[in-house]
Image (tube, rainbow, N blue to C red; front, side, top):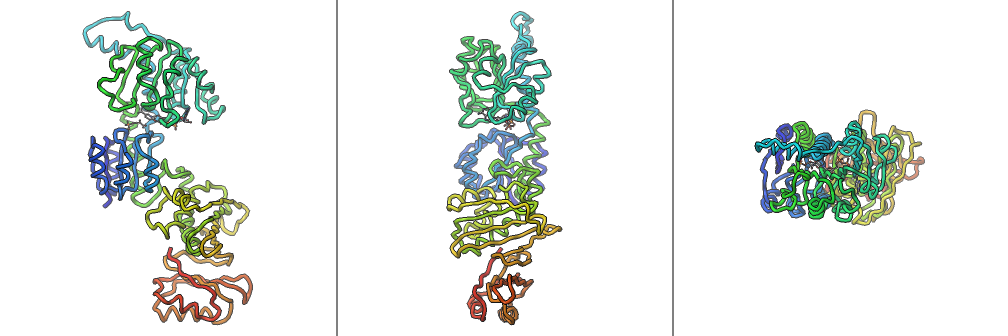
Amino acid sequence: MPKVLVSDPIDQAGLDILSQVAQVDVKTGLSNEELVQMIPEYDALMIRSGTRVTQEIIEAGNQLKIIGRAGVGVDNVDVPSATRKGIVVVNSPEGNTIAAAEHALAMMLSLSRYIPDANHSVKNGKWDRKSYVGAEVYKKTLGIVGLGKIGSHVAAAAKALGMKLLAYDPFISLERADHLGCRLVDMDLLFRESDYITLHIPKTSETANLINAEAIAKMKPTVRIINCARGGIIDEAALADALREGRIGGAALDVYENEPLEADSPLRSLGKQAILTPHLGASTAEAQINVAIDVAEQIRDVLLGLPARSAVNIPGLYPDALEKLRPYLQLAENLGNLVGQLAGGRVELLNVRLQGELADNNSQPIVVAALKGLLSQALRERVNYVNASIEAKERGIRIIETRDGSIRDYTGSLHLEAKGALGDHSVTGALLGDGEIRITDIDEFPINVPPTHHMLFTRHRDMPGIIGKIGSLLGSFNVNIASMQVGRKIVRGDAVMVLSLDDPLPEGILAEIMKVPGIRDAYTVML
Ligand SMILES: NC(=O)C1=CN([C@@H]2O[C@H](COP(=O)(O)OP(=O)(O)OC[C@H]3O[C@@H](n4cnc5c(N)ncnc54)[C@H](O)[C@@H]3O)[C@@H](O)[C@H]2O)C=CC1
Ligand SMILES: O=C(O)C(=O)COP(=O)(O)O
């Protein structure tokens, strides 16, 4: 049974799903060293923001197939290291959207009305009304940095509160911003004109320290900043200085450069103009159930050998597209494996042509599957959907993708051409109506065979007696033939023979086959 380590608190709904297919160990609060020591025996690691998955942990994870982040941000995972090691990293892109957006809105309103401090003062026996005269958000300008899933939900709610909306997001269209009632502006204008600024961007090298002293200097002295995105996007020292000196109106923070926030952080000593929560954006019952189920299902699927729907390091595998493409991925893998062997290894060029209805689809997963098949001869189980592209790049394999929707022999088919140590070779394959895979062409010779584990291919002259000779030769070596197909372009010209075998070919039989008159070439392939 595979083993899953759960190193942060995860809702029971997720643990129940994992328990169906794996031994689940919940061990929270582990140090990096403890994780490095423990990880070699685990097939999967499930985390939230509390665990930092370092390169060291990934290197030690020799069994590790998947890291599941029960939430959105994967900035606490060394994703490039995981990719290189062929470990799939998944998250839950939508499970906590509403929770995070509502937390940001709650922070904005709390900040405007000093609710945390007012509450504290009442509970301490006071009745102080004059210290807590707040501000209305109605008709104020909210600047949203990052108009993705959370930012969009914040926009819709803020619009309903009567706020004017500005947004900065270089990756979204004017139409989308328009639709959300936001004016898309550059960052400087957003800083200058906003009464409230809320951040909803991922932490990346570009967004680190985005809100620094220089940015703060451009803002209104009354601006209130909300960060429910990631620590490190705001320079905390610069923010604390600005708040203390009254150069901005307030700040509400849920996330911090270092978590837990240091005991002596200057943020902790700020007054009512600052609200600090301990990374609670996703902490609702609903969101925790959503993300736990979402990620546990993906871990379960990967452990069962199925693809994950929200992998952050497998290009192009989006859920709805994936469902449609799933049978073609197996086809691509089989054909990649086959053409790699026909080309004799050392492949320098792979041409992937999507034909028929397949041509309308995202080619990226198909190309990755073909590369996985192609490289599996050399790398065996070390190559997978995660690292196939990197491994191919490192081997200098040039990839050409083409599409031809006009080829309609089958509903959808895939044609691969590889240039390798044995020259140029090509294979075509298709799916039959029932999802069965057929190899329909080898080196331009039409055939129709299902891929099997052991296969024998010959190039020969189309002449009487040759098929019988090969059949009896295999029989004399006690090799059972499951199916046999001959393809030719012209009568008595060049031909190919493809045999699906129930048994592996014994040593020496190829040399015997090569002695049969008319045989030009013979090779075995294992799929
Ligand atoms: N406090 C909490 O508990 C939670 C925090 N988060 C954080 O919120 C972030 C956003 O989450 P979603 O909205 O779900 O992600 P998303 O991917 O839907 O949206 C992010 C948006 O940021 C934009 N963006 C990227 N780089 C940018 C840049 N340099 N400048 C401006 N815009 C940029 C993208 O175009 C995208 O539209 C996550 O990355 C995560 O770090 C998410 C959930 C809970
Ligand atoms: O989903 C995210 O990005 C979050 O920040 C939520 O973090 P958490 O899972 O609550 O530790």
